[in-house]
Image: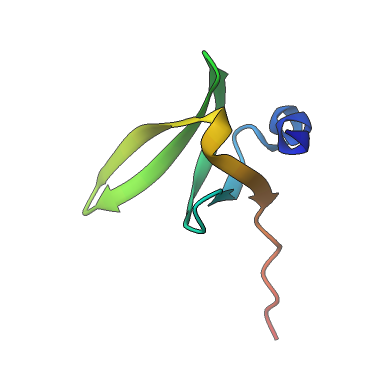
Length: 70
């Protein structure tokens, strides 16, 4: 779980999460608790949800790249 070493640096930052099953999600990394990754995700309108993902389901965590405006 090398991705776990990134968590302290990425907390409160926008991230993308890739899962072992080939899917992914994105949101703001809130931290970890009880072997779960805590991610604040946008639902719709003005609603957000704090989602919890088991460590064993996560393949990697990526920081968002900066915008490239021309």
